[in-house]
Image 1: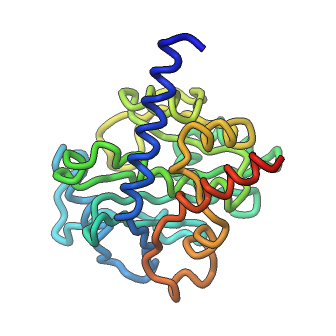
Image 2 (image 1 turned 180 degrees about the vertical axis):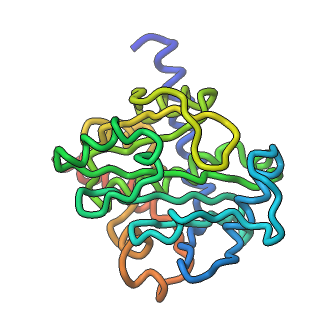
Length: 252
């Protein structure tokens, strides 16, 4: 390994340790579909209004019909008990094809379902402005939910409807490849491109390089399972999952 490669690997390792340490202060909370004024919807509104991406509304929330879908999962991310970011995703299958991304790129995503495959469709990734400045790694902490969803639901693909200027992040971290051209979604005033990563191909590489994306089956069941309401906010288990992976690798 060259000196440059060693330096890059060392930097990645330090970054991963820092993120796992920060996860000790993080909790994830799943949003109830019945709560129309959940703080997550207000965070979305404030984030979009800050850049005038959505029109003003008197309720000061941003919701749409996709939030009510049976295959929708919305989450708030908390650091030290304060809501700092949010994200939602749809687990899209041939039996439940509801998908914000498919409404924009039907000719691209439709054939995936016709082939019998499934995908995770993340959307509404928003963050508190002050928190995004205080925690530059916030995107990783938030997207960890999506990594867990891909594992829990055994999805073939994880798609990403992203602004063109954010595409490099998804290509670098997840090896995502562009599937669709620039288009607009709903009331948003900015264009998005469609990218996708094939989960079985990138799973181990991402886990090895970014162990903070790892989780235990128990954490995933608590977040995505039918009894999530009885559990409340969930503390991440990346540290435990990483240790178990190291033990399994050493004994293999």
